[in-house]
Amino acid sequence: DWTPQSFVEETVEDLQNNLGNDKVVLGLSGGVDSSVAAMLLHKAIGKNLYCIFVNNGLLRKNEFTDVLEQYKGMGLNVKGVDASARFLDALAGLSDPELKRKAIGRVFIEVFDDEAHLIENVKWLAQGTIYPDVIESVSATGGPSATIKSHHNVGGLPDYMKLKIVEPLKALFKDEVRRVGASMDMDATLLGRHPFPGPGLAIRILGDITAEKVRILQEVDAVFINGLKEWNLYDKVWQAGAMLLPVNSVGVMGDERTYEKCVALRAVESTDGMTADWVNLPYEFLQKTSNDIINKVKGVNRVVYDISSKPPATIEWE
Ligand code: XMP
Image: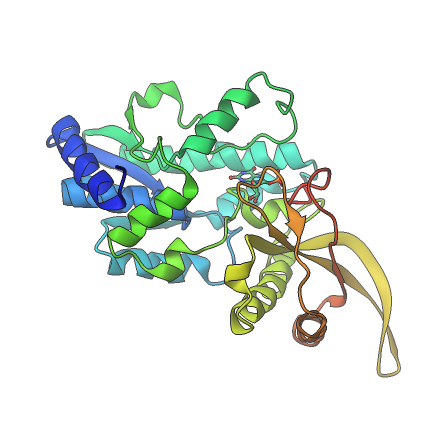
């Protein structure tokens, strides 16, 4: 019978046999999969695991510093690399969602490659790929969903890096990954985190990206997510976030007319992201959140709630 404990024992032993004294590099994203993969490898090979956590400048508010600290607290050998400026430069003037994804994927590989080259004699690239990623990337090369959105999690690094690939979670589903993490005493808040897309807020800012728009959306998102946590709704929702719309609308503040940004909030229930239903959040919560956002976040004067399900409406707006 499969148990998380036996999986950990067997995997650690396999990793030790296969990796010996080799060095391994792994990109941490802050998400469940890469974090659990890192813990397994850490158990197996300790300091020979070199983790790299890249700040693409498109993460949630305070995420980079908070999660980096959390990783260090777990004993991981992790280097935080703030490449925000490089990503923003590459995104300048791009509005098309797929072009944005490609630019982010390209810069990520450049940054990661630069960092990996600093590790002398590294032999392996570890990835937090899980079973559904494998399935999805197969269908993405030919299936009907091929051109819907190009997720860049699978596929990895250019050949010239010549690293061998190690993917300890490749046979697991998400709930199994969480159970494996829990059996290694990983923090419940880390394991219970909502999924967050690799291109981050770039695909939640409709149209072109600027530092100011990122800042506005980080503030809005933080009010929404912290609110969900305070109201004990966070764990009842599979994924939630805010979209910054390329729309200004008229408002009044005192005697003044304003003409400011509109944001859309989205919260969905799902099992794998392939289909999703919008969540019927309590009106009192939505009311409070809307007021908080409009009062606290300068530049936003209107909040709407997305009541569309997938299909056809994808979870991300881009
Ligand atoms: P959609 O928007 O296709 O999203 O309904 C389904 C799930 O995938 C995530 N997502 C992405 N993840 N790179 C990622 O790593 C991407 O380009 C990307 N696009 C969407 C989305 O957040 C949801 O969990």
